[in-house]
Image (tube, rainbow, N blue to C red):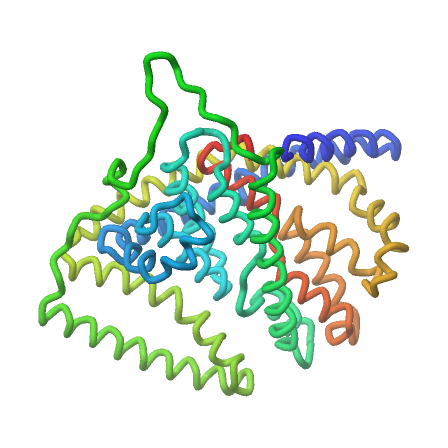
Length: 410
C-alpha cells in the first residue's frame, strides 16, 4: 500500500507542477525536503535515540520492563497474541504508550523504535511487517493522549481564554481513533488480502521457529533483590519526587486554576525527570553497571537513527513535492462542498489534509488559523486543536518505525 501512496504523491506532484508551470518549485521542494530529512530530523533524532535507548537498556537490565510486561499481561496478550507474555517488547510498548499519553514526544519515539526492534526479533519474515507490528503502529498513530500539549500551547500563545477546553474533546476523539485503529487491524489481519505470506523453506533447512527460550537476550539476567540500604535509597528518592510533585502542582494550580488540568500538567513536567533519575538509580541498586550499559544502549540508538534516513528521505521528499505542487490546496477546494455537509469548516480542510503528512506543516497551518484577532476562541480553533490533539503524522511514523527495522512490505 505504501508503494502506491508514495508513487501517487510523486507522480501527481510532477503532473500538477507541469500543468501549473511550477515544476521548478516542485524540484526545489524535493531537495529541501531531502536536506531536512537528514539535517533537521535524523541528526537531532540520533541524539535523542542514543539518550533514551541508553536509559531503556538500563530499564531492561534491571528488570523494570519485565515487571511492566507482567503487570499488563491480559490486555497485551489480547492485542499481541503472537508476542510471548513476558517478552521485553511488551514492556517497551507499554512505556511508549505511557509517554504518548503524557505528551512526551521526545521520549515516545525512541521508546517506540525500541519496541519495533524487539518485535522484529520475533519476525520470521524479515522485511515484512508482522501482525504485532501493524497493531503497534495502529495504536501509535491513533495518538493516545491525556493532554494535547502542543495544541494547548499554541492556543494559549494566540491569546485563547480557554485553551484547555480541547483536553476533553481531544480525549474523546483519541479514544474513538484508538478503537477504530484496533478494530481495523484486527479485522484486516483476518482477510486473505492482508494475510501474511507462507514462509518458504530452503531444502535441507528447517522452517524458522521462534520460541521465548530461544531469545535469551530479551530476558534480563537475574539481579539481586534490593537490600535494606537499597530500599532506604528508594524511599528517599520517592520522598524527593513527591516533594517536587507538590511544588509543581501548586505552581500549576496558580497557572491553570487547578483540577484535572493541574494534575495532568504536573505529570507531564515531572515524568521525564522521574525516568531519567529512576532508571539509573534502580539499576545501580540492582548492581547493574549503569555507565557501561547506558553506553551500549546509546550505540544502538545512534545506529537506529542512521538506518531510518533512507526511509525519511523517500517519504518526506514525496510529501514536500506534493505540497509545493499545491496538491493540498487543490484537494481542499475539491472536497470542501462534501465535507461542509458534516459541518467541517472550510478553513480547516488544509489542516485536515496536512496532518497525516507533516507535523510541522500542520502546526504552521494551525498557528496561522488562530493568529487572527478573536480566532483563538472560535469553533474552528477548538475543532482544529481537537484534531491536532487526537491524530498523528501517520506517514512520518510509518517511515520512521518501519525504517528502523528495514521493513519494506508494510
